[in-house]
Image (cartoon, rainbow over all chains, first blue to last red; front, top):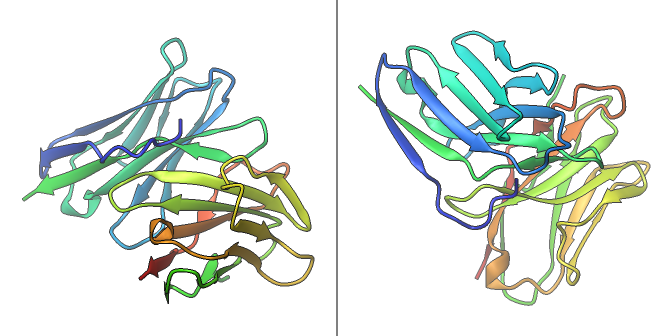
Amino acid sequence: GESVGLHLPTLSVQEGDNSIINCAYSNSASDYFIWYKQESGKGPQFIIDIRSNMDKRQGQRVTVLLNKTVKHLSLQIAATQPGDSAVYFCAENTLQGDMRFGAGTRLTVKP
Amino acid sequence: NAGVMQNPRHLVRRRGQEARLRCSPMKGHSHVYWYRQLPEEGLKFMVYLQKENIIDESGMPKERFSAEFPKEGPSILRIQQVVRGDSAAYFCASSPGQGSTGELFFGEGSRLTVL
């Protein structure tokens, strides 16, 4: 759902470890979800998407899991690298067709 | 194929002045979205436009803020009589519209500083 002015939660992982970033969405009618990555000073970049008729989708080093029962999304990053350090947002679609973003999580990868 | 282009990248205004932020969507995209981001916070939806139409402006403050996406030219986000609280990064995104996957393509943002 919409961010509500809270400071970003953070996740710190060691290089080479797997990362799991979680997101709760607000609208049970949402049927399309996207994970975005935002590096410092840049706009968000698409990572991976998933439709509500799926519960898992894999990309290159990333996997998105969708649990519609509890309205929960997760992004798994395998073998996390320093270049993965960024803020990660989940987004859900609305009936009007725009995307609403979650609060975001800052991922820091330690060498 | 150029991506979403936003300008200016940085804009400094004094309280009471007007700020105009421009967004040119990706070629072939007819849907534009504006988001606002405060430091260390998430992206807050403001408005969703198609050419010459506002589809959803539920995130736009009722006063001082307006947006348009004319038939020709870029989308404009206009903030009148700016206040310090308007200082933020404003991101524009575009999508092809109906029949597309829903993925939004973002610009690099316009950072507004109100002195």
